[in-house]
Image 1 (cartoon, rainbow, N blue to C red):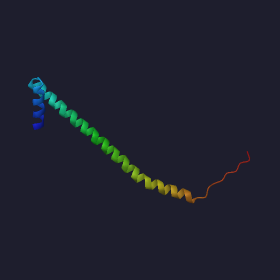
Image 2 (tube, rainbow, N blue to C red):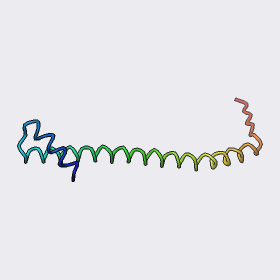
Image 3 (cartoon, rainbow, N blue to C red):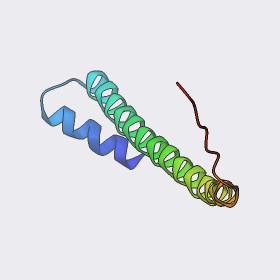
Image 4 (spheres, rainbow, N blue to C red):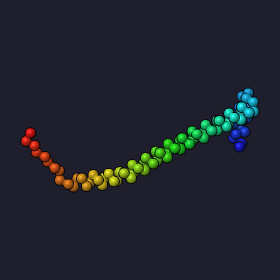
Length: 79
């Protein structure tokens, strides 16, 4: 609540009436919260992508090791 009052007082000092200043203060706080939420969402998505990569990497290595044990197939053609 103190933050809203401080921002409202800032807009009052810039010449807005109380109602406009209060609405602008609420809009500014909403903008800040939206930006922070977007940043946290990107952070969570980046973390999830990293975890998928870390889980998939050992599985990929296991699959590649199995394929190396099989003998290579040589196909000869008379064309």
